[in-house]
Amino acid sequence: MSVFQNQDQRSSGRLPGDGASCAPPPPPGRVAGSYLRVTGPVLRGPAGVLVAVASFAAGGAVGGRAGLAIASTYVTAIGAYCLLNFLRCRETHCAVTGPGFLLTAALGFTSALAPGSALSWYRTGTEAVAYLVVLAAGYGLEQAVAARTGRRVLR
Image (cartoon, rainbow, N blue to C red; front, side, top):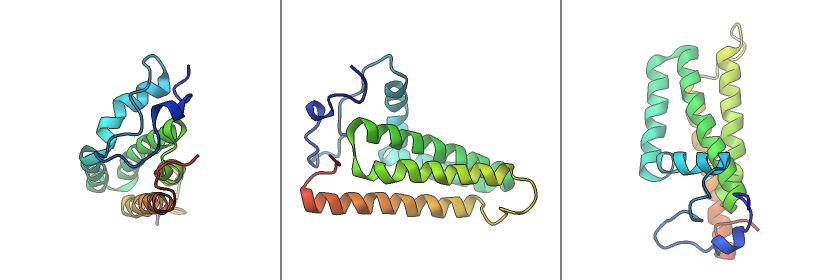
């Protein structure tokens, strides 16, 4: 059985009262499942907020292209987590944040690696704002879906 099969058996998609994740830990031995299991506790909840703030703060402190690469590395990690998490349990916000974060990170890496000043406007602060806009869009959509259907997941 793959990590992403039998989603309906794992979760009703109803809003959990305790804020728990949508599904039990994925089976061991799978690359995607291992990534979700290892990164989930670090990238979700209060720890996730601290990691995000620390990543953007470190990127801002280093500054320039290196700082942008630091921030983009974090945004790539959270984007991959969200995309895999959406494939596993279909949380609505992950449908927006996964691709949105990965595009934000791709622009960050492109800006960090591009010669000259063509993308000089895209720095760590700009990436942080883009990150927050994508995050707000994802959770805004999830709230709209939950209000309409009573579920946080897309089916």
